[in-house]
Image (cartoon, rainbow over all chains, first blue to last red; front, top):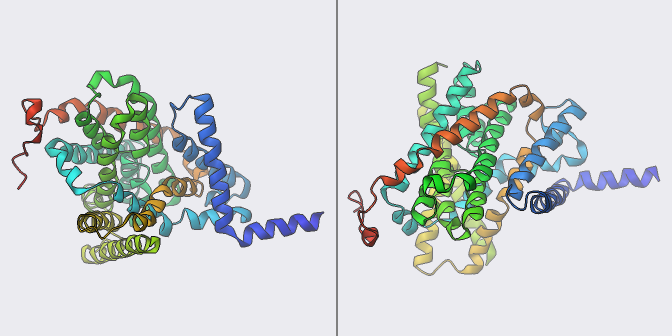
Length: 258
Length: 132
């Protein structure tokens, strides 16, 4: 009995990436199930799944004392490959396919302004909070500021400029707070800002940026608005990934020294 | 064939990351500077062009679409390997950074929406001045 259990564990460990697909798939199925049943879709399944991921990482950290979340559990080491830098960058780049240049032009000036203001303002606010909490090194301040942009831009920026894993996790957490707040809060505040037409939806996507948050919120407000907000928010992540490790990092470095 | 889309995506990603590395060396940042962003722009321009020329058939596009659909699962896997235990000590900071950034941007939406808005709805197709 014990022998066959060992064999099972070894099969999972040997086929780490496949185990990761299975575990993540089950996690996401459970998240969408709970999102549907407990929140009637108000809290988007993908946001819930990411929260589960962070929760599992916390449990992994407590269980093993390691720094790599569930990856330190031998059985789940394949998660490290699935969520590692290579496949992460690959998948993020692929999301650009959802947008087209002609649609981008239709956004007009306010769409472009919203992207720039959204990225820079989120970054400055996030960085200011990091400074207020006592961070003094440019790498950490930039990574946390980038996390306030989105939970994608945070780790992409952090990985590019060599932030520590704790700071990366903080920046993901900040981005996650934003995604969840947008998803849950925006439907209640939609009328306040006149969010009922494609044009405002585009500006909304450009200002908030967090694709899962924007899509979740717009789906709750009016499903017809989803592609408009999704389009600008797609560019937002790209712009954030472009600006985070470059101009924003250099500006932070100039302001706070090495 | 599906592999054409996957290959195109891989080539764009590799080129983007290479450009990012080059820029990092040029700027002395010891980092990949915006590689993912460049790769996204490259993919956007290439697929747009290939689509207009009718060279990107739906089956090839599926090779890109698959990875696009895998984006959230990969983010979940990425979240599961972060040092959350270490982050928990700074919990209030993450909460505050995320919440203030959200509120700050949200209240500005109506002001940004007014920029470059055509006077009448019928003028919506008129290009803005800085477009060619």
